[in-house]
Image 1 (spheres, rainbow over the protein chains, first blue to last red):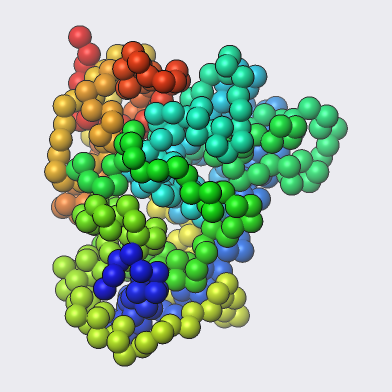
Image 2: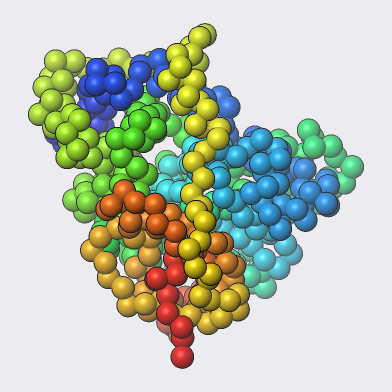
Length: 196
Length: 231
């Protein structure tokens, strides 16, 4: 078994699933159902709904900052790896970026499956030591007077970044705002709107 | 443990791969990724092992395998090791089954089945209920918000959730979360032990020295026993 071979890994996962089904630890159709749930029902559009509501409803934003677990539960996005939440807000002088240095912890039911760059060691190693340089590689150039806060999800708390609402969006509805809010902006590796 | 997963602050792992930054790259690039994710969740739901055991299993990979393999190879390594060591499925059985099955043909992006079996319905339910990780505390928190604490000089070779780059660093308690499952008790004794958890703030100069290239604050969520009062 060559752990570095994609072909071997795929064949071994296939064998594992086959044996797990025989031993009563899994069902093939249940695997299909779980995969379909992740691919269709979980994804950054859920997080974008939360952010757009926070942008348009000051009371909700205050609740989200004070008790993100309850505020996100209110929108029905609590779930596996999204049980305990903290929301952190980007402002004119503060930019937040999230990482899990020890593995790849991420709020699945709110933002979906994490992107590859979040899960692999390079980002995890570097963003806790040189976040400004890492952000520049993502195309995020912050003025020197913007302070960076890095959040390492080392326990079961998961983090949502509330990106800054871009200029020129006053009066836009939640439905109009949501498509502007990217997955990366809610992890902290992108801005929303001009300059994004 | 300071295994291959404990990468915070390490040098030499290379730049973020540019192919990962392609717009539109799907988060599960190959069908085996979603299926490995799903069977892991199922094994946990069936009680074969728990999440902390699964994380710890990954920490036991060979360094070269960890850093150079595709991400879900980590999950495969850990789940296979746990199922073997606990007597469910042996490594040899997997070897044989690989040979028997040959090249897989997995459906990319399977549809949700029209009717769900009771187990499938339960799994979807687990996805949307989650598995809360907090526990009633058995003692009040030792540290108040605003207290200055130091991360202990702690080098467990067993599982914990203390990133090595925080070792011996002085920080400030930013938040008290209450008690959560202790990861070591969960991984090694399969026991539910409440442990007070804190958000702790560190400065970049504290972590990386006065010559640190950048200035920023870093927050990590740390258990009480990882900390001691600072002088």
